[in-house]
Image (cartoon, rainbow, N blue to C red; front, side):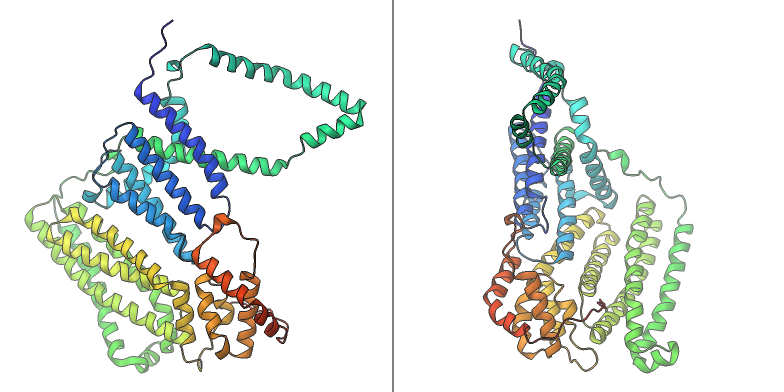
Length: 506
């Protein structure tokens, strides 16, 4: 009997399914503990390595961006080994998801460097959805089970499975009778099948979750096809008047706001108090995030307007560029006002993770808008997305270099404490990177703050029951520093009063 021929697509689908099974087991064993550290680096390396192996094995020709996207994914995975800052970990995870989505599109042959924003949205959304449902498509659609060889081994395996199903109820009945007849046999059965049902269910769920996610991702990357139809195709603009009117009104509103801001810039706190009845610090506190939101909304408005007009006539495009350029010029004043408010806000209330990352986002937004003006408004729209992505990765790398939690602690320690004392309760909630500056600053802290810091450091970092999968350079260093000084810290803590209950103002 001639063995059935297995098509290359079925072979690839079977190997993707096998990768999903292994990925489910690895994901359950590695990623089931938090916070992520070494486990994330190992998991990312395994995912990228398996994808590279499948691409090479099946001689798939990816797009030109696949190599640098794979390297970027590895760097983002290894970033979890360095800093211990929860917001930074969240941004790393989002960047990793986006990079993997773009890598999937690149393996399909797309050129990421020529994407426009709608293409980026399409690529990330379709890759995410396909990863969720792709495992089902792989099993019931891509694997042609009739092509598999039907030899005696497979037949016997199916027959043995059928025998187990038939014997199961019979075994249960006889086991119950024997256990009732002989207590010793009943004890043996109890010990043999003594397991934690909740743990089994949890591990089964996560194995299936990670397995289907890995299989779905590889299925989309290696067997899927780009969905270009998701990106809207806009008809040529018949008249630029409605668009020009809308942009002109937005420009007018921004101009009015800028005129008011100029008065505050030169008038200072006296004008603010006289006009709004607020202190300069409260004025700054109320304004930054609203201005950041307004600045953020300008970019999608301009991108949407440019998508409508870029196929129009030269005069229509010129009108759009003039109005968009004016809006960006006015927006620059708004963003300067926002950053000035944040500076006053931090000077009055200190630095926190929210304020630091919001400022970093504003810096990124300034760079992206400047890049929009340099590329899109000069007729080079195909360069915009790639440059914006590079700026985002650069800001993320800059945050890693700045060391956010240590920077926050050092900044707040160096502030004059007359108006707002050092917030020790907030400082001890930060990650492992905050531990070295806190230990160095102990001698110059107030007695009450010193007790709060010592108590918080001992509670969080004087531990040995640490899972190796969560290993991280900063967390390991923090634990080592606290353990080395645990004796003196505990001795000093003995003279501290009992802790008082209080709310954290941050």
